[in-house]
Image (cartoon, rainbow, N blue to C red; front, top):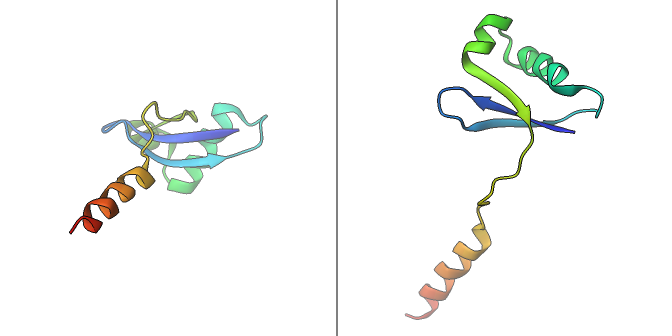
Length: 75
């Protein structure tokens, strides 16, 4: 299962990890605490751990790139 590390201040996903399915949120939190090398209180002030969720509006970079190339070819 995948888990996101989310900034409490910006609500931005800063890291995603794929862990065993039985780990749960608490196990993912323990993983992220270890990776950030913070104590639990400091970690909780800065980060939230949530289940992975795809964005409703994913970036479709290939469509943007195609539009740029098409515009450049018109010259």
